[in-house]
Every structure is written in structure tokens, then in C-alpha cells.
Length: 285
Length: 344
Image 1 (cartoon, each protein chain N blue to C red):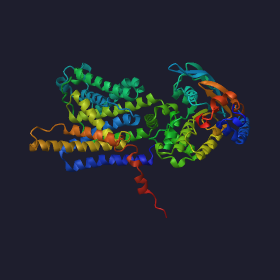
Image 2 (image 1 turned 60 degrees about the horizontal axis):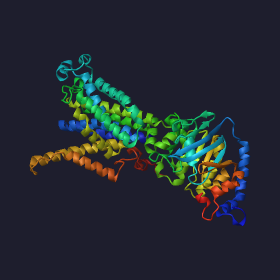
Image 3 (image 1 turned 120 degrees about the vertical axis):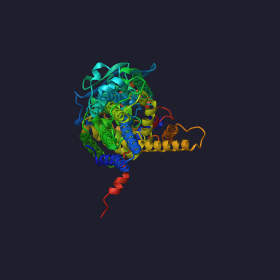
Image 4 (image 1 turned 30 degrees about the vertical axis):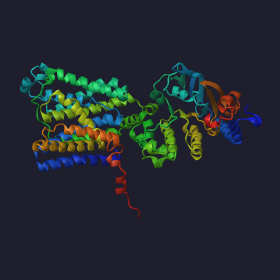
């Protein structure tokens, strides 16, 4: 299924994107070779299982992210992607398994302590501090790490300038457009100078132009900020162009992981994620 | 360090305090002086509540309990020994001989309220939403019950009299001005900004590394310091009171001032205190005039409370954040337009 003239619309879409993706991947391969992950800086979630009222949301999932590496976490809705980020960041406690960063165990730590260990995140639904100005939103992460107001403000203004958001610095975050809110949330996470950045659907709700801008921002981050990234998104173009590796979940289980090219062609991934029927498509995946 | 907008807010908020004092001094009417002094003491209490409630987003009923702690502490520590033998015959021997300066007594009241708040609130600061509100109400009930039954120190449910009269208009105005400055400084401090972040989104705040319960705890202690000092000033102004002065009615008035003005801003706290006090005094005069004119066969009572309650309901429906809800008065765009440099 999914091969030849009878392939699904979703697979046809991927096929149509093929040349573009290959070009991007080749660029990433060179990039990845230059900034190869350091063995002593790793975020590891090992054998993670999570249950909600008896329902198994994650089933013995193991995921590894190296520094300067971008890992894509994909899968159908309800496959446990956000739950895995929640486990890593301490919002959900696993029934088994462990999470460690740079060799230090962080399983079941409080979210704030995990953040201070250098793991920050964005949320599926944007969660800004709406009644604070944009610059104060960015400042908060540095303040939480113990920076003074003066130092945090300087850092916040620098980061906003770096991401082209200086014009919004004194605007209340709640009044921003959706796309700008997404960007500010990422910048806020970066203000903690994290070792690892976990982004939950950063491109959700963005138009094509905004998505393209986001892609260029994200692709440079591991190099500019010396961090590893885990990205959940349903925008396959963004994922394929951005990620060095993919991890695919379905019904809480890992069904594929490895290099983008390898994973993309796995029959289990095509069946579970890309769909085989006419009614399913990438947007719903 | 305060930014330009915050300094502007500070000046604009201290201005009405100065104007009030100058006007009352010029008019030299004792009633107005008493009203103004009460207003300024209430302002300290409202600002104290704003520090915790406005920045954390958690409603606290316990605030007025700490006002009582401040009031009784300074009363006991400053009352002349001869008066103590009449007003507090069962007072502990060690306290009978203590007689300190009222300013020191007020500060001691604030410190004791802070220490008590630190101990009581530490385990409670993990709570949010309804649980936090209900527990704060329980704390108020406990404190009131202790005040009513600890006869040796409070004279029980009876009125405690003989407290030194040491609070005047100028003292309360200076204290109120300092209270405004500290409230703005706290709001813009590292703790204040982080606490406001937790108010907007607890999950996101913990994900950036904010220690929510610790931030709330610090704000609660500062809030109790304000309440304790406010209580001490009030005790030395009113000179006789009973535990009922620190219970539901006062809680409702202080809360009403903050909710109507806008809990999230210091400007809202100042505006609410002035607006509600002026409305209260106007209604009280109106009530007295109606009763004096015998327009209605039965005397009109409770008009002020009913109107305050209706005003609270109205504000919560029409403008849930209060009259000045998000930006301080010095941050309003009008100032930038007024002081903007003209091109050319």
C-alpha cells in the first residue's frame, strides 16, 4: 500500500515534496556532521510507560536527544507525543522508566527543577503570561534562574532583537497575533539558556509565510544556542526539512526511529501515520 | 531600579495623598481630618492586600486578621503600665512592665504579623483557586477566635481601651506614601514579575523554573507586614477597639476597595481606596440626612454596605479586573503622546 499509482493522497503529497526534502536533508547532513552531538550532553528518556486511569498512553518508549541535534517526534493524534514531553518536563509522572539529562536522573523531579536543569519547552496551546509585556515574558525565564531584573531585561531585549521582535517589547503579550505569540514563547524558553528545547507543535496555526520564518529560526537554533531540540509537529514539510532524526509514535508505542530517510520509508510508519485510505491525510495525521 | 513609567506612576499616586493632606490641613475640620486619616490607613491595608492578591491572583481573607495582630501587639507594648492594670488586668507579668514608643510598637506589630504569616502560610501557599480562598478564610476565623478568647492580651470580646493616641494625618500620610512606593517596587522586583507570571499561568511558570509556592510565601509575608503596620496605625488612631473590628466587615470593605479599583495594579488599589471612601462618606451623609428629615418612617441603615456590595457586583460583571485593570497610571499611552517630541 502507498506505492505506485494507487498511493494515498497523503503519500502522494510526500512524494511531491520529495526533491525539496532531499535537498534539505542533504544540507542537514552536512550541518549535522559539523555540529555532531557530544556524547556527554544527552537528554535520555528510557523505557517510559505512562497510564491514565488504566489507559496506557506510553508503552516502553525510549528517546534520546544529543546536543546540537534536532529530533522530530511525530505520530497520529493521541499517540502520546505531548505526554512524552510532559514526562520529560515533569508535568506527568511515568509508571516506569527514567529520564536523565547529561547523565543526571531527573525522573519525577518538579517541573521547575527540571527547567533549572536546562530543559525548557513550549506548549501545544500557546501559554504566555498575557498580562505581562513581551519583554517581561522573556525575562521571566532568566529571573527564575536567579538573574537580576537589570540583567534579565538586557537579555530579554537582546533576544527579542535577535528574533526580530523588538517592536513588540512593551506590548502586552495577550495582544499579540497568534504567530508572534508562538515566536515569543520560543524566545521565552531560550532565555533560560537551555541545553534542550522541547517544542510542542510550534507551527500549529501558522500560515505558510509564518511557518517558513519559523523554520529558518528553528534550523539555526542548535548552532546559535548550542542546544538539542525535540519538535512535535504535523507539518511534515517543516519536520522533514528541519530534523536530523525522527521518532514515530502510534498508540503510545515506538513504531520507527532513526534517520529521516529511513523512517519515512518504513511500512509501519506509512500505515500508521500517513494512512492508507482516501479519507486520511497528512493534516489529520 | 524603577523604570521611567514606574517613577511616573509613583509620583502620580503619591500626588492625591499630598493633595488630600494639604486640603484637610487648609480646611482644618476635625471630621475631615479623621476621614482622611482613616482613608490613608485603609490605603495601606488595601496596598498590602494588592501585594499578595493582585500579584499572585489568589484571594486572601486572612489579611484583616494580621491587621488585628498588629493592632493588639502595639496596644499591649505601648500602653502605660497604670492603664494596663485597668484595661488588661490578666496580662502576663512580663508584658505589664513593657512600655515602648508607639512607632516602635507599630513596627513590632508589623514584624509579629509577618512572622506569624510566615509560619501559618508556608504550608498553604501550594494551594490555588478555591482551596486557597477557603483556607485563607479558615485562617481569618482562627485568628478572630484567638483574639476573642485570649482575654489576657486582648481583653476578650470586650473593647480594649486606653491605647496611646499617636497616629495623626501626617504620620499616616507618610506611611501611605512609603507603602505606595514599596508596592510599586515590589511589583517590578524579580519576585513581583515572577509572581505575576504565576498569576497568569501556573503551568507555564513552573515550566520556566518559577518556585510558585515560595514566591507566594514571600508576597504573603510582605502583605502581612502592611496589614500589621496598618493595624498598628489604626490602633493608635482609634485608641479603643474589640476583635470584631478585625473580621468580616473590615475584610469586605478592604476587599471591595481593591476589587473595584483593580487588584492587579497599585493604581487600582489607590483609586479604589479613594473612590470607595468618598462614596462611603457621601452615602453616610445622605443616610444621616434622610434619617434627620424623617422622610421614611423607619431609620435607614446599612446603605453604605449595600451600595458597596452592588458596586462590587457591577464592577465584576462589567470590568472583572477592576477600573484600572492592567496598566499602571504612569504606563498609559497618553503620557507618551503628551511628552512625545514633535517632529522637526
